[in-house]
Image (tube, rainbow, N blue to C red; front, side, top):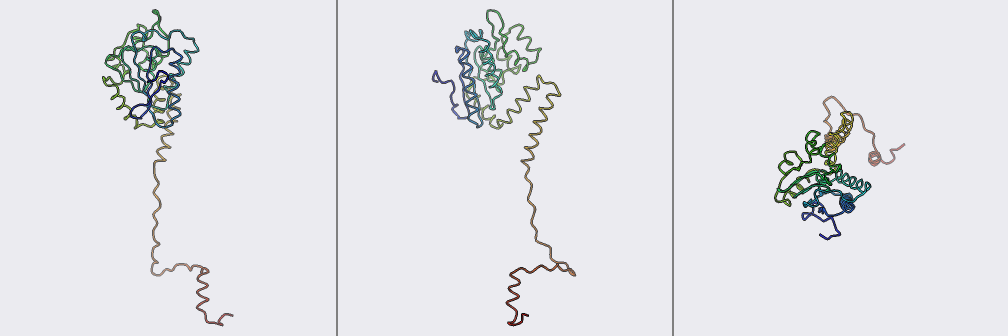
Length: 272
């Protein structure tokens, strides 16, 4: 892929792929994520976004490097935009996965891990980086399990990540796994995917009364869709029943054609 082009089409034409490079500065990573989101939003058609997260030992631990708070905010907003995108997000991760790769992994819908995958939280000179990865870990795992990872900074091998539900599939053939997931995702419309994702994300933190309103709104949309899908049969046209004995139909008014026929049958000079 060209060094200036961060996005490429998938070979099967089902969507777009962004190949992550851990050596990029934060500003370029942010621009790349926003670019793939913009591309999907402009396409309009159902799409799949694949994030290829290949990290090295050197770029997986220290994060975010030389950056300002504004740049960090822009990065977090780009990841959130990806997380809420009306398209299935698939991440394919291998090797040590930390820093921005960890952020992107936790924001995707379906996560594929290589056998050598190792999840790790970013640390700078022994100081933990307090990014939104912690928030997403708590959402996915709950406070109890996330506490073990965050407080003690434990690395997570792929087997443990799969048990925790942070990885959905382990595969030595990522391309085949991506294709299978993309085909299966094609059965779910983008709008339907967005509704399911929103309900899941809000259920972890919303109070019951707040969540009830969101769920009722989703139920209302689904009920309206079901009503639209129900076809109302057209009324059956039947011939009028024959007259019963002893009954007669009321006389019908003669139209212009009947008057003309009556005049034609009358004898000349019979008119008054």
